[in-house]
Length: 288
Image 1 (cartoon, helix red, strand yellow):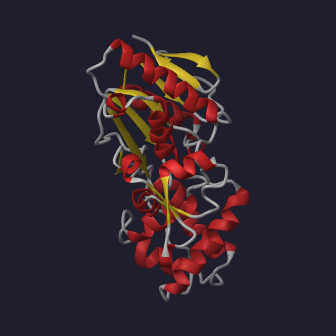
Image 2 (image 1 turned 30 degrees about the vertical axis):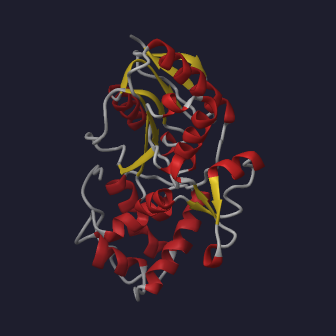
């Protein structure tokens, strides 16, 4: 987990439990130890969600949480709870569909050019798994079976809570809104009994994706370094401009020459490393 300075001191005095002042030590820890700075409108949501979780554990204030969990163990359960609650997990199947069309085109080209080489794809910041599963479904529709068998799809996220959901591959009716009926019939199993109303990805698709817990702020990522395509969409919003440049350089180290980096359509990148050539506002190719 990233560290950018000393731990914040425990607040002096005795602030009112659950007050803004009481919350200050958590904000400082989130910024200094985890490297996340939240917008003002999201801070209140984190405060409410965290308070509910802490009260369930019998913890009576944010200060108590800091003193008992964050300060003695800056990488323990308290820090992971903050990560799980503060990161945005808004995602959907086939979000920004033009990116999946682009993926199919590129993968088809690689399969023609090098029919015996595995094609590696990484969804960095995959949240609850909809993005890598969408990749697998799009490719299953477009490729013959022998081509699909060459796909090596990875998904990673900072949140352990979201990775558990992704690995389970079980989604609600709300989660699959917007998925066509044809795709629902082909790629999802309808829940029965206690699971009635839920949808689970079929084994054919689940087996194409492997998940890893990765903090993109660290310098070591236990994954391959020769990905053909990396989706890292709407992740850099948590990074400062300087951190964003470091992230892009590290991503480049895991993309093969001629490979592609796909960012979110709404992300603002003031600059990109020199080894990337922009094809569109959100798609970059690593030069050979």
